[in-house]
Image (cartoon, rainbow, N blue to C red; front, top):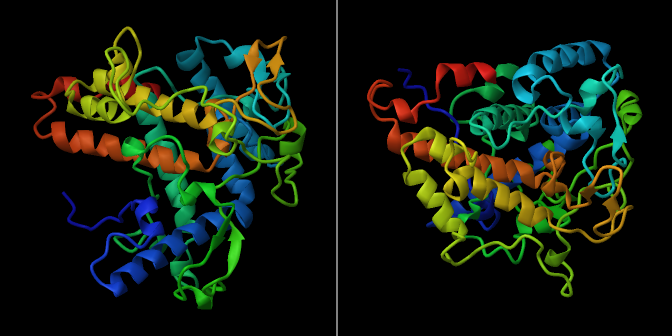
Length: 386
């Protein structure tokens, strides 16, 4: 086993305030690390916007580009995925995207459309593959952050960005103890102000400002827009991701409550997470699938509740609030409530935390051989499906 030290994924909510620290120097260093993460993601979403949208498209579609080679690779991937994942049927009856404000309206994408791979949902949910599939895309996001890390500006060897303890880790938000009522500044502030002078030589002096890359990003565009690599010139309230109106509007209520107290039928979020972590059985821990999983005490259930609570019913956007699409039978929600949830940058903090929960579960339960803990190890057949 290698003794090489790996990089660390940090709690961004804590770093935002310079925590944890014992000395003023510790706090300054933590705030500089917060700057580093926000600069990297801002660069990824702007200088690297084509690659960033490609990555987003791997979850629920929307990542197409003008590169025919990429489209051909993605089309082959669809063909390999569709039999195991959707029983040979194009997902969502061919309608894409799901109804989220500010995105192109849901349109029927037929199987003979040459760009149909740009509207394909690869992500796995409500199945044992859920955690395994999302682990890989979180790692891809982390690598993208590393590509744009200001710490390595001017480095002669690009591979250094992805090595040892100095590499940048994808941060997380430990939402288990969140009250569900207010969004932290980390995702709620529309702009980010550089906190330290650490990155002045890289072009980001203390006090400089750019859009907070965890607050919002562009919503999915049409297949035609993807093919022409169309991006709006600026972020505004008519072309970006949205969240539940209740976070900002005192007259709105949350459509998907965030349980803070356990009742007889509904566990609190903390109880849900910690109950899942204590369950040694892999399937009971990882999926809420009724046939094999752990239902509302699985980690997937906690994951789903976060998505649905943050998405909720939105107000505003070009479609308005809760608009019904009769031909599709779906209702508009905030971005995090649909398979295009990945377009809301909060997705990455959320799934890095789910990955943290998975790592905690592995450390707790996989302490012996596979023979000793068969129920705690995904089967070979399961691994092959993803």
